[in-house]
Length: 119
Image (tube, rainbow, N blue to C red; front, side):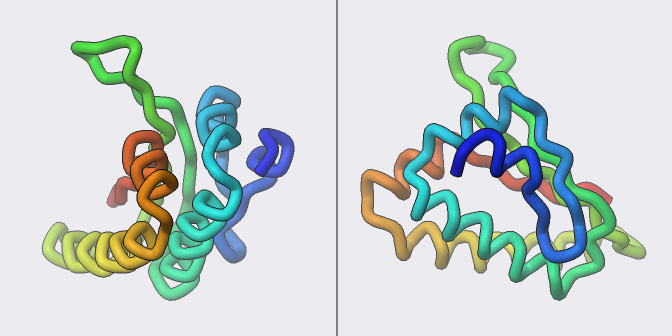
């Protein structure tokens, strides 16, 4: 995906606010691998109470050379246990998606893309 395509990213009816630096990181990934991971997130988001989404570049505090694109999904969860169940469901779907990728692509996605839930 190009940075321009990433600027208009959405998960179902939820538009994703994408920082330019995150778009740059994501655009360097193999297109088929990135598409698979984003499709998995979108499929999950269509079933979950997602109210907002954003992608931003996050730096490791102890190693400024290490940066990843983190996709944060805001969910409407009544409590932490409910949110944790949602996270386990999403992580299971993401694990399956990553496992379906060739090893080199899986490694790149794992190193460069993080997904978080916020509630």
